[in-house]
Amino acid sequence: MTIRSETLAGRLLSSRFGPLWAVLGAAGLAVVAILAFRGSRAGRPEEPGQAQGTITVPVIPDSIRDEIPSTWAQPRNDPAGRGVWGPDIQAPLDTLWRIHTGLEFFAAPALCGSTLYFGGSDGTFRAVDATDGAVLWSFGTSCGLNGEAAVSATTVFFGGQDGYAYALDRSTGALVWKTGLGYHLFASTGIIGDSIVVTGNSAGSIAALDARTGDLEWSASPGGVVLGPVMADTVAVFTTEDGIVCTYGAGGEEIWRRDFPAQASAPSVSGGSVYVGFADGVVRSLDLSSGAVVWETDLTSMSVRTVVSRPVVAGGRVFAGTCDSRVVCLSEDGGALLWETGLENWVQVPPAVGDEKVYVCCDDRRFHILDAATGALESSMEMGGYAGTAPIIANGSVFFGTASGDFFAFLGTLGDSGGQP
Image (cartoon, rainbow, N blue to C red; front, top):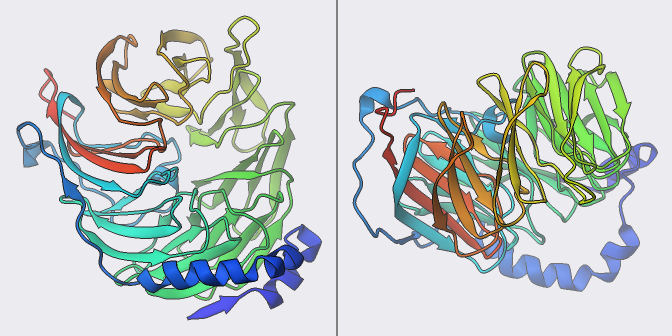
């Protein structure tokens, strides 16, 4: 186990990762108390998630199941952000299990084989059996965990609001290393080329760490709360809440940077383009190699501020949610508005998109299934709380967390098309 803070923090002063030692010192006793309570759970199995089955639906046949990834290199393990493996599903949905903490889940899970890896606002990072909700191991930290994790063959990587990047043994949850980056980590974590772990902090800095040791490899300072990353081969794409979109090579060289006048969403990448939603209601497609604007579409609804979620790219279309209660679908090649569907509250987390369905966690406290071609609302299900995480769909099962502190797994029903992938 390796813990780095003083040495690395000193090396990062020039890139705005300077640690908040005065604040940390004042809060030291509180942190120690929290660590003593939460850290005692590290590496220990917990009770299984509560089984909640209410109906019986057919099991997805093996003939149309997708192979679930064995590693997870970036949010949703997909630069385009689709979040779907296996056939599309429809209602009814059978509740498989539920984990309740009472505190928010904002980080969508990484799914490797039959294991989910995710953190929550209770400061606990969990490895959970996706089939029955049993907690295989858990690791306590001193702060909330908002960013999505990355998973290699041996190690799980994530960041915390306590300013540390963590690496845990994938099998046991034991701490391998943690590296202090000075400020809160709201960004997700990505892996470049199996050896470099990248993330960003709330002070506008990006750090690339050696995956084996946690040592700093390179850093950059685009400015603003860092979001992303998305990996396109060996290129890492980040955005920030200051409206910056930027890309870096595996060695830390900045490839390009663009500044826009409104807060940016996390990015997605597909077909040589970067897709970003902005808080002024604009969705932009940027050339991945140069950063040039390929197209931009203004989704502003009258005078209402229209924040746009991370776009998801699938089947030649771009899907996103807005804070004025819409799900929108644009053409990938030119940004034309193909359809929009109004719901009853914010759609602030990205949807999951299959071949024929769009799956949406909405702040109207419902999980919605829409037709991907027309936007028609096909079914809705109560979630019991505001949306917390983006949904993941895998071989008929749906996984997501809520802002009410529940993490759910549901089993869906095959669609009329037979669920052919």
